[in-house]
Structures are given as structure tokens and as C-alpha cells.
Amino acid sequence: MPSTPRIPRGAGDRPRPGIWILLGLILLAFAAMRLLPRPHPPRTLRPAAPPQLRLHPAAPARTHRPAGRHTTPAAGPAAERPAVAPRCAIVIDDVGNNEAVLREFLDLDLPLTFAVLPQLEFSKQAAQAARDAGHTVLLHLPMEPHEASKDRFMGPGALTTAMSDAEIEAQVLDDLDSLGSVAGINNHMGSKASADLRVMKAVMRVAKQRALFFVDSVTTGKSVAGEAAREIGVALGRRDVFLDTDVAGEEGIRARLTSLIAQAKARGSAIGIGHAHPLTAQVLRAMSGEFASQGVRLVSVADLVASE
Image 1 (spheres, one colour):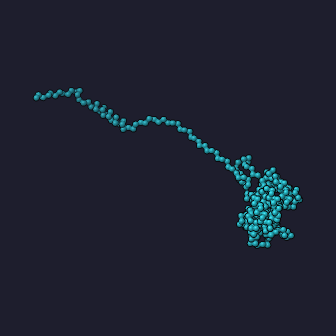
Image 2 (cartoon, helix red, strand yellow):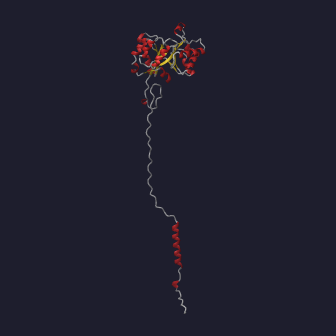
Image 3 (tube, helix red, strand yellow):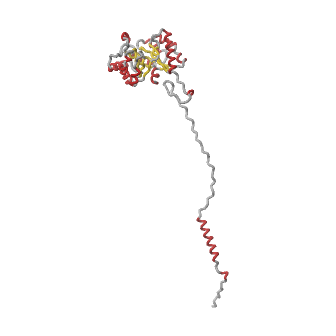
């Protein structure tokens, strides 16, 4: 067969190197774009919310205990502090001799304190009657006076400076047991014995053992009851006014009660001691409204001694 003649290429049929280079660059650029991280759309920044204040409810005001005992007033202007009414206590001594006279005092319906003499026929019944009526009862402890001529008035169960410590303590315990439950002790007479530190320390040891307080009747200006009580660790009260000792009749007792109220108002508290006499009961009945009208609270002596 005759061979097909070759057609010679012209100059325009040759591959152009520039086109290939351009295509290569395009491919490289496309690959590079795929490898680069895609840009994220810009965030829209929201304005920060203002900080919120958390409001806590105000704490409730603190309440205070009633003025039965001393309380510490809350800090603040004086006008905001609760007023504490002045208080006074009245102790009726020499209970245990006469049941009818005791009944006169119990019928007053006043918060009196009754100091009962030990070892008498009516002593235990008197103490129980006072307790049953809701009153505070004390042992009215007989103690030796300076005047020997008054020794006969001490009565049974008395303490003398001639007794040893052991004898004093045993006698006080015996006197206490003769009355049943009592809240404290006060002295009957005792101008000599209450000035003797050894004697009074023996008494206070028994008071501490029985968890009792002591009310000093202050029958002498030389009493060391306070010193003995502090040393042993016994709560102590102190008589401010004798209501019916060395006074003339009803007017004298009225004047002493008025003085007791005035001292309570001046110092915040005061203790008065009267005796189981019908006239004293009559004056207390007549003046029973005077305490409230003067803004003074009449309370048990236990309330005053416990708050000291």
C-alpha cells in the first residue's frame, strides 16, 4: 500500500510553555486557598450588663429579756435603749412564831420574801405555806449578838462565836433541813457573829454546798458577810432599809417604805426588811399601789441577788 504522507507541523502547532506555567500557577493557588483557614465572620460584641447588686433583707432587731434580771442594753442612742424599771425587794423576818400573822402577809398578794426561823413549832408549816403561795423562802439564821442580854432572843438553832467550824456547819445544815427547800439564808440578829470572818466563812461554805445565796441583814456596821461571800463564792444581797425597827407606829413604817422606794429609784434596786407584825402588814396593804405609781417594781429578793 502506498504510505500516508506525513503532514509536517507548522510553527503554530508546537506546545506553548507559557500556558502550562500559567495553569500550574492557578492550580497551586487553588490548593493554597483550600489549605488556608477560612476566616470567621466578625463577632458582634454585646455591651456588658451592669453588675447587679444583691440586696439582703435587714436583720430583725434583737429582743431583750424582761427586766426581771439585769440585762446589757443594746448599743445605740440612749433614746433607743429600753428603760429598765428600778426594783426593790421586801423580806419579812421572824416568820414561824404565828400562823395568823403570816396569813395576813400572804393575803396581800405581793411578791414578798419570807425569812423563817428554824426549829420552832410552826417553822416547817410556815415555810411550806409560803412556798405553796409562790413566795421565796429564806432560812432566818439565828446568830450571836454583841449584847449578852439579848442572847435569849436568838431562839433555837443559833450560831455563836464559841462554836468550832464543824459545829457551825453542822448547825446550819440542821437548821436548813428543819424548813425544807429554801432559796437562801439571812441572819437573825448576829451583830457579833456576823463580824467574825471565821464564823461567816463557815456559814458561806454551807451556803455554797447547798447552792444558796446570802442576804446580810447588816445588824452591825462591822459585818464581814460580804468579804466571806466573795472569798467562798456565794451570791450576796445587802439590806438597805429596816421598815419597822425603831420607828413610831404607822407613820414611821410609811416613811421607811417611802425611803425604800426612793433608794430603789436612785440606785436601780434596794432591799427592805420588815418583821412579821400585824401593823407592818397593814401599812404594806395601804401602800401596795405606791410602788407602781412611782415606777418601781416589787420583786423577790432572789431576783435582785441573782442579777448582782
